[in-house]
Length: 247
Image 1: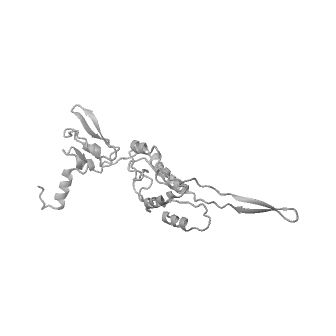
Image 2: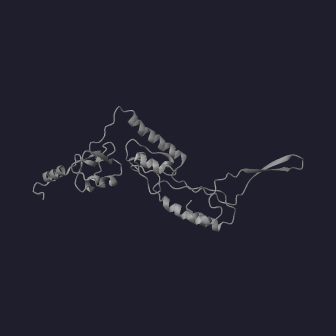
Image 3: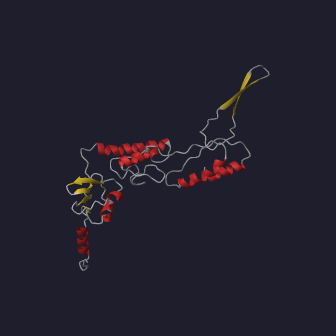
């Protein structure tokens, strides 16, 4: 039930209100708008309490023949119980930093693609399930856990894992140690290392995804993306348009 509808129900009610639930919609269905509309409920007391189970009340009355007759009635709660909001765990930021995985604007872990890779991260070998992803029902969390376990099994059952060859590498003779590539890389694949020529940037090919952002940012052209070098791209253009002369 949406927040605005709840407020209208409270204001216009002439009968006792029983407990009901406020559940967030599935991801991608304007969950932020629902949360914002609930702010109007804060003026009512109590603001947030746990769900309460109102048990049946049993009343025994004596009949004319002396026997007791049992009547079951249900208590009438006078308040609406709202569930406390689900927020990311305290260690989510640290997990994101250690495993080089992304967070969404709400602070929950972000999958690689909502449709094509719903349990994968951009970082290979790390998988996602449960409320670390976003608030969800137990049945949905279990289904996602099955999917994550299946994805992990596809890796664990192999003798070896083949990594992509389209990764970046640094020409240390051209590197000026400005750190622009390190600040831009979202996978933490680049770091400074000590060399005889001083600190130079170096790419970890296991973590690199070959997106080429560091390549375009480097002011000296010290980083190149394997199989997508400038010379290769120029030759492809020349082959496609022979009459076009490169300046």
